[in-house]
Amino acid sequence: MEFLITLLISALMGMGIGGGGLYVIYLTLALGVEQAVAQGTNLLFFVVSGISALCLHLRKRKIYPVQLLILVLFGSLGSIIFSRLGVVIDPEIPKKVLGAVLLFGGGVSVFATLKQIKK
Image (cartoon, rainbow, N blue to C red; front, side, top):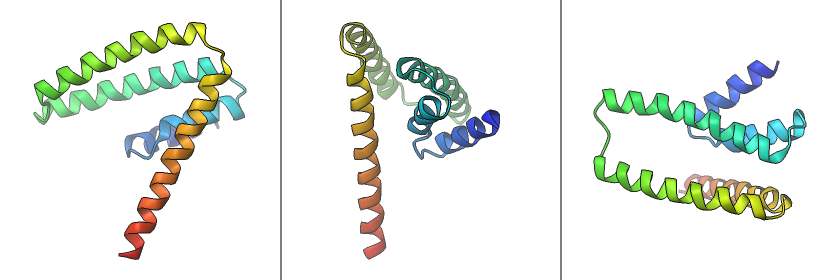
């Protein structure tokens, strides 16, 4: 069953529906995995899928070098800063921030959908 749920979440992730947040929620609530471990697992899951997407985009020649360089630089800088910060802050803070981000993202999606329906 866990394999099927992970497969479903990865399909949602591939369609851009926000499967990463769902995966963290599944790991923490359904499987009882610690929040930090769930987030790390989600990041690893995302890296593997990102590498697959990168291979596809390289094959289709849809990679823009300047934008890629900017993303790599800022992504690396953010990773270093927040990994250092994660060691010194209270573990409850990332849980609350993740919850707020998921609620905000969900709210934005709902309002955008409602706006399109009204048109």
